[in-house]
Image 1: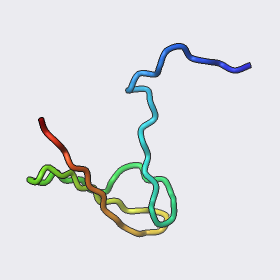
Image 2: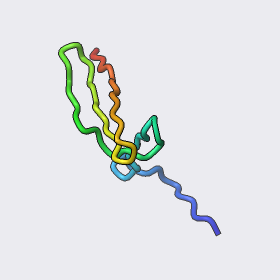
Image 3: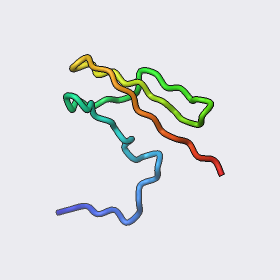
Image 4: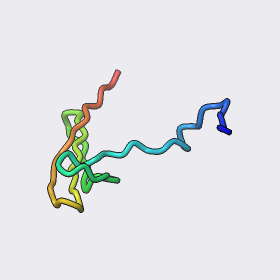
Amino acid sequence: MTLHLDTPRPAAMRRPALRSCPHCGEWLVAPEQSEFGDDGVIRHRWSCDSCGRDYETSVAVTTH
């Protein structure tokens, strides 16, 4: 027997998007540091506890 939900889950109940380490594939929960730059870019610094490597990601924020 399979349970099927008729209503979608509210955003607050959805599992947050997790990021994996690009070097070893281990799941990362949160960045070590985040900053919002004057150029409208959010930069995240990640550090993997499993392999010890660091890397950065960035997200451009657009305003209308």
